Amino acid sequence: MEFNDLAAFVAVAQAGGFRDAARINGVSASSLSIAVRRLETRLGLRLLNRTTRSVAPTEAGLRLMERLTPLFSEMEASLDVLNGFRDKPTGALKLNVPSSAAHIVLPGVIAAFLKMYPDIRVEVVVEDGFVDVLAAGCDAGIRYDERLEQDMIAVPIGPRVQRFATAAAPEYLDVHGRPEHPRDLLEHACLRGQFAGGAKPTWDFERDGEVVRLDPSGPLLVRPSAAIDLAVSTALAGVGVIHLFEEMLRPYLDSGALEPILEPWWQRFSGPFLYYPGRRHLPAPLRAFIDFLKTREETGALLPMR
Image 1 (spheres, rainbow, N blue to C red):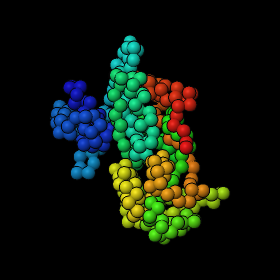
Image 2 (image 1 turned 45 degrees about the vertical axis):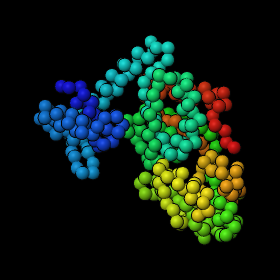
Image 3 (image 1 turned 30 degrees about the horizontal axis):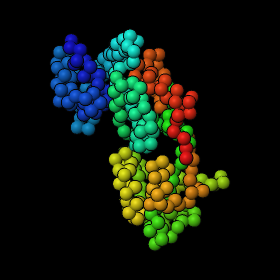
Image 4 (image 1 turned 180 degrees about the vertical axis):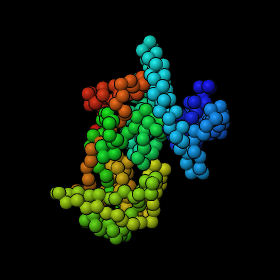
């Protein structure tokens, strides 16, 4: 039995589709389809049920996955042992991160890490929804504590305390007025974000124990991972009010291009974590990244809160 055909089947089954598997593994969807069909022909069994919208293992496919998955993991672990004979680890590190981490956390981490480990290749997949990092073919993910999966190990990464900032261009506020209470935003043009699944995050504020949660309306709705810059530029143009991570708006607040609104109400929350499966063997690139983060934490190099 061809090893590559078995690997193609595992990749497609884990990703839940040929296109996602192709994207994760850097190959073409057609090559994966050919490999899986060839495997099914040799076995005389259908391993995957295919529809126009999804791909899922058959009962036979599930049984094969149960046996192949630990074998593939053991093979990867066996090959990774060779990293112990190198001066510095090599290989790929795949991270699944939300758009906020791609903008705020990784720029202050990845460059320094790659300088220390030039033989490691970092692949970053940006997704704002709930994702099973292992099923997505990633070694680890970055998420906030309320979105951490169970049975995962978490390591602090980035600023340990953050805030959502609310702001608008001074010319917008000169025309439409400056809100004195969060509920005043319901009368303003608000620039909203949306998760990939369609849900819109609420705008939350807190002061002296009073929590206000809003679902305002406005002229622009964007999916954050793809259009954060568009929302910011629209706010800068004086179209409406924006509510975003303070780090993303800080340059414009400092320059005066945006004016802070309701700052005493800006809600604080704990910073993000790198999370990964608590398994016995970790790939050398991931192990190096974890050690790198822990060293930065010990030396106080994690990004501080302004």
